[in-house]
Figure (cartoon, rainbow, N blue to C red):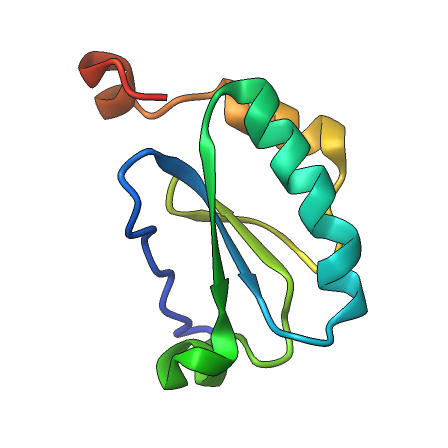
Length: 101
């Protein structure tokens, strides 16, 4: 779907938004990797269940888990720790200016 809305985390300290749903085995495998890399980078992960929000479910129903880093889709289905680590090393200019993670 080309018009998928990319949500923002509600937590201002979270650079990673993790879209998931209950019962998703790929989600259960990927979340520990995402949390470990976010901890390493000193940032938070916001986990959001797409089935609790109709727009998220409509946009991302067949794509979970979805890992969004700094407002951009980083990965769907599976995540590689090295690639996520690299994405978390790059910080947007406004985060560098404000000193946020």
